[in-house]
Amino acid sequence: MKETPRNPFLTVDAIIEVQGGIVLIKRKNHPPGWAIPGGFVDYGETLEEAVIREAKEETGLDIELIRQFHTYSDPIRDPRHHTVSTIFIAKADGSPKAGDDAKEAMIFTKEALPEEIAFDHRKILEDYFSGRY
Image 1 (cartoon, helix red, strand yellow):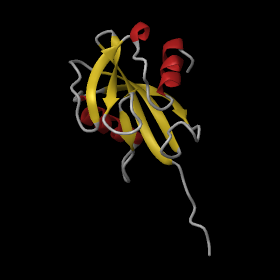
Image 2 (cartoon, rainbow, N blue to C red):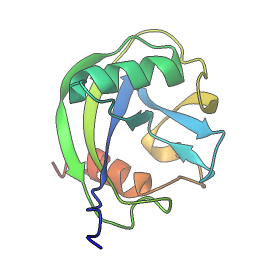
Image 3 (cartoon, rainbow, N blue to C red):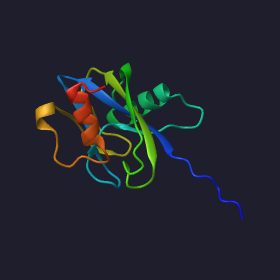
């Protein structure tokens, strides 16, 4: 019997710059912790459309994309399954409000990031704050 090919899931995340910090969401679902807002790309959707939609669903913010930041693809970056995520840098006005699968949405500064950060998002934020990409 021929084995069905398995492919990684395609995701997007937005580092949203607002009020001198960045927005993180506290996840309702496994894995627990704070995360960069984002999620899965729907069939027929561009990466840009997906990240704008996900940011709105999870934070209530209308974002303006600044640029594509970097793509992360380590097979163990998500404990649920293999994902490949393209990260965007965006800006927004207003205050985030949790929605969709977010319990909370808050603004954090580089100096005051939360202890528990999900996935590989701490590494992504370290890369962002260091200007690595």
